[in-house]
Length: 92
Image 1 (cartoon, helix red, strand yellow):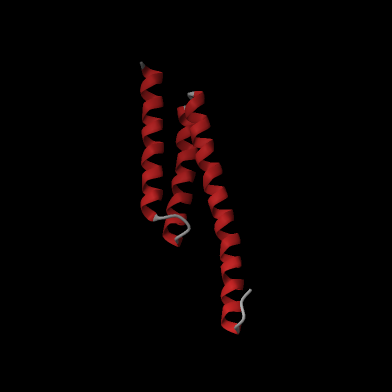
Image 2: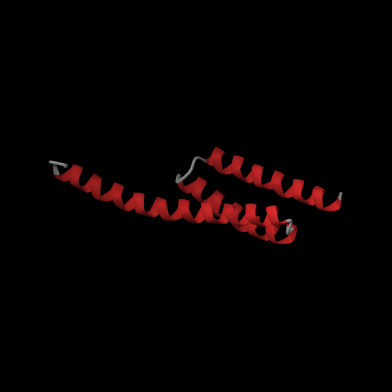
């Protein structure tokens, strides 16, 4: 347990940030899952609309430091690749 006033405040701040970050991460993961499910089902239109929302959330999380910006970019790239692959499989 913290012994100084400043340590107590840092603990309060870190707990508050932890709650906020957990909410954002959970929201991002849910959105990514929606994109993957739509792509697996072969629904390209839905996957693209869900992707737009996921990209928005990933960018915001990356900018706020909840996830590393490179991780956000990498995840977006992988989702785009998945959608592109689904499109090609549907046309072939």
